[in-house]
Image 1 (cartoon, rainbow, N blue to C red):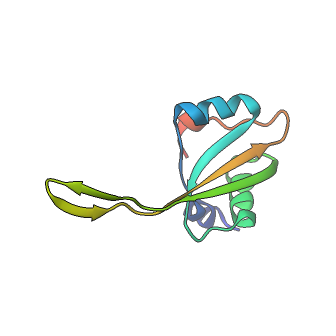
Image 2 (image 1 turned 90 degrees about the vertical axis):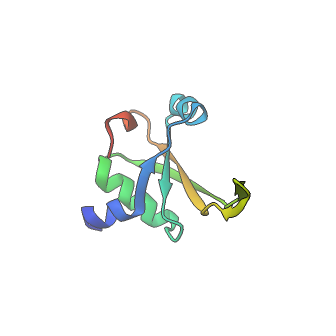
Length: 97
């Protein structure tokens, strides 16, 4: 996988209170493409950051229906990946991808 293809799989880091707490147990959370598979996500993270990935867990959030000023709209579906890193490896998501 080339570096450009890796950037197509990993879209953005998820920086929330819960994901910051997960970093204490050597985990990182990224927003990924909806059609990305676990092996693709693992290859992309290993290629971009030079770390060893032990496990990849994914979750897909279905888009919600919302009303804004009386107009109905739908949010997009999103997919997140929780990456468990090997002991001693670290990714600093605050520096950006």
